[in-house]
Image: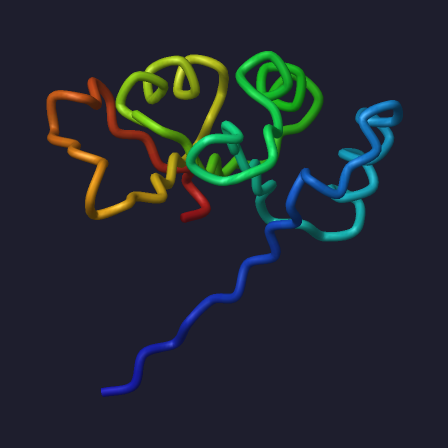
Length: 116
């Protein structure tokens, strides 16, 4: 039995011009992006420091696309709820097997966009 895979286009917001964020998001939607990819880096787990929940809230307000938040931070369990409340559709956690310990008590609600 063969399985068909769906390809999704999820441009990273690291490449956005934040002085023109509204226009850049509209261009991505018009260009056929399926999702937005939001890399969160804290400068400690990986360099450099990128952006946080305030920028995510703005993106959520300006776009209807699902937003995949990729946490590359120390202690991601302390930030899950904040990013979920700020509008993340999906949260991916980049873990270091030596330092990250997560369990189901860190997540109070599971959400996936309908296009997943």
